[in-house]
Image 1 (cartoon, rainbow, N blue to C red):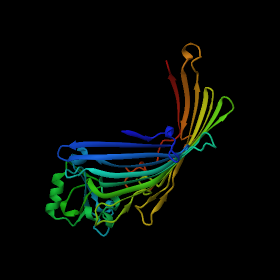
Image 2 (cartoon, rainbow, N blue to C red):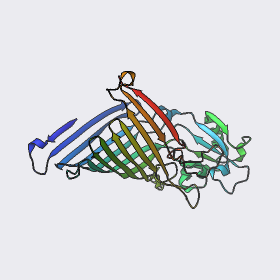
Image 3 (cartoon, rainbow, N blue to C red):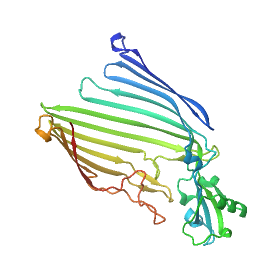
Length: 369
C-alpha cells in the first residue's frame, strides 16, 4: 500500500515529496506453522532532482519438499578423494547427501539506504547509490562447500564421523536410497574410516551486505541522434556460520560463490531507425581455497555487440513493423578462467559464475502488426 504523505504541490520547504510504502504478508504451512512478514519503504525528496530512499523488511521461506524428503544418496569414495591423509591406501569413506525432514524455514531481515540524483544542471544524467544488508537465519544449505576438504578441514569436523562403528556404517548404508561406488571397486565395511554427512541443514547465520552504483547519461546529438551511456557495478561481502560453536566462513570472493565485484557497462547509439549497443560484462576474481595457499582465479570480461534496424510504420507491405537484430555475445571469444580439477567429471571452470559459451552470433527478425 502506497501512502503519498507529501506531494510537490504542498510547497513545504525541504520536503518536495514524501512517500511511504507498507506491505504485510501472512503465510501458513501445514506442519511448519504461520508467519507474518512486514515490509516498509520510504522515499523522501528534499528538493527537485534528489531522492533519499530507505527500506526495511522481513522474509520467510519454507523448505521445499525436495529439501526435506529428497532420497539420501550415499557414495563410497577413497578416503584420499575427500582429503583424508594418513590412512591405508585402500581406506574408504561414506559421503551422504540429500534431504532432511527436520529442516526449519529460512528467515531473513533486510534493510537498505540509497540516494538517486538527477542534477538539473546536467540534463540526461542520473546517479543511484544504494547500500543493502540482509541477515539470514536458518538458511538452508549444504554445510560442506568443498567435498575434497571434508576430511582435512576443521571447518567440516561437525559433519564428519571419524572411525565409525560397524552399526553406524550399516545404518548409513541401509538408509541410502541410492548407493554408488565412486572410484572404488567394491564395498568393504571394514575399510570405511569415516562418514561424511553433507545433507541439507539450517545454517545459524548468513549475513550479506554491499553497495550498488548505477550511472546513466543520455545525450541528444543533433535532431535524430542519441547517445546513452550506462554503468552498473556492485560490491558484495557475505559469510556463513552453521552454528555458534563453529567459525565464520567467508562466502563472497570464494570459488563457487558470488565474487566481491561485478560490473556492466554499455554504450548505445540510436539514429532514427538504426541503433547499435556495445556492452562490457565483468565478473570479478575469486580465491580457490581448496589449496594451501589459496590460488587466485582471475575474473572474466566479455564484450557483446548488437546492431538493430527498424523499418517503421511507413515501410511498404510486409516490410512494415520489422525489427532486424544482429547480435554477438562474447564477441572476443573470451574463455572462462581455468581452475584445478580432481575427478575427470569436474568442470575445469567455476560454472556458478563464469560462462563457458564462446562467441555466439544470432540474427533475429521480429514483426509487429
